[in-house]
Image 1 (cartoon, rainbow, N blue to C red):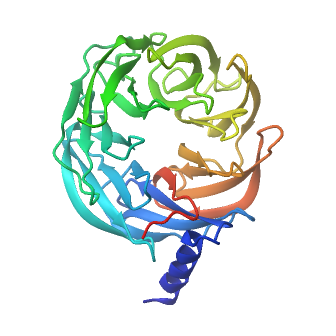
Image 2 (image 1 turned 90 degrees about the horizontal axis):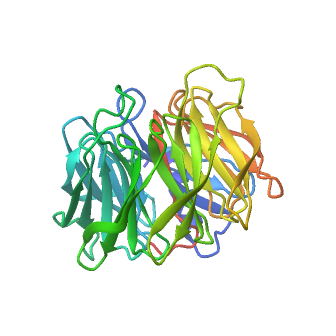
Length: 378
């Protein structure tokens, strides 16, 4: 074992120990080729915001989006390519953080771009961008994936002829109570709503079956407010965020506001990518690729509406993804355009981002996921 790898193993073991509450393991999904060979791992220092030198956790082809099982023992990754897609299951080594491939299953469509795990840990849910479909893949007790048991195919188009000639499912998101799955479809300007049966691994259309966005919006990702009263959708093509009131009994979304993610005087080309609500529920963040920024908003706790705080641009280049650590202290931004991950400290009073002075090199990073400190992953 090399010195660098042994140091990383010690950092990882410390982060996973019950007393190691000052550091947090983190995984990065990437597009492979160039500097990247697969899924990488690092450790975030929760006092300084520093990131340890990234180490390859597992080789994989275009593991763009990854998700960690609620028990902390397994990681799931899509293999994003133009042909038939696959989803891979990995076991997380509790001592080193390295990943061991368990098995693979078909994603049920082409170019899978997003994977989620339901709150019970029984199913992986996948969005297939290329074919405009979503699948449910049961998870066995040993972490392996079973054959898909749920599938939905979207249809339709919208006004952007280049990007919306057909359906393009871009993410699958679970309601706080795990009863509903929301599939954001960029191609048809809808958030499709399905009732999830976690025991059977099936999804069926809800009533209402969808929430409609303004034509040309291109909904991409969804984030629920910690209160469960609101949901936020970032619209890739229109460069907006739409706030919805959420009715948990019916699984219904009702639009209450749409706000721009770009400055009024910006005239260049830009698209949105990720949206996140701060753990304290007071702030929302959205990423712009082109303007190369993170837009920061204050959330009205009663109404759920958004008010712009700032645009942070320091050392940001094509922010395909970002994530906020569970303590709410730091925001990590994955710069696909500069093969890097940079760290920002979050002002707990205003939500504003301040560069923490830490940056690591990761080839074409696409996804950031944390393994909570103190998790018993053995």
